[in-house]
Image (tube, rainbow, N blue to C red):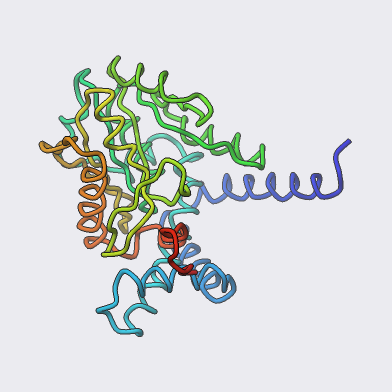
Length: 298
């Protein structure tokens, strides 16, 4: 028998999904205006997450003034909220609307063919638009690693949304490495999002903005195991929707050293962030795991 808390949680989740279905019918300018308002409210009310963003920005951009970083933090919340509300039309609006609003640009040819390919998709706010842009443009089955959500209704909604246009196969972390590598070698591109703090296990400490940062070396490992090339995918939130840029495959990756490869990944990620700093996922505690003996940063 469900508890009162479970019933309340289910009602809130269902109501939220219905609200997103309604938002999907609105003009994009209205959705973005709502996202701007929501982002400003979250910046004021969610103090704990605001401190995380401000800490991240002070660590990564010490050369900027405090006023500049504060403005960047506010814009980060706005971009985060806008991208969240954009899931409404990405997952519920007519396919033609999504096709008009999401553009796949750059070295799109890198995603053609059947060669083993690892797609490096960093945590920019538009990552859900990235799935959609590739699925709508490239008729090639892709895979990624998915962590189940504790809220099962929300989990189902996210899974349906990300698989809406087909061509995306999800592996759970409990599935292990073997089936993922097998799919990669069979020509199914693997989306990897390794730029988060997943804890000490299986991580290496490499520089990120000059700070020793726990980073999973999965990009190098899967590229090596799958004998695959690495193709970066950068989603950029724009006034008309999203531009999802495919960059040329890295010609010097993977190398001989897994740690050096991971440091190179972080260095290149910094270059990508520099082009749209407010759109990176600064709400995450990227520096939570510290080397032994170092104090906590949050």
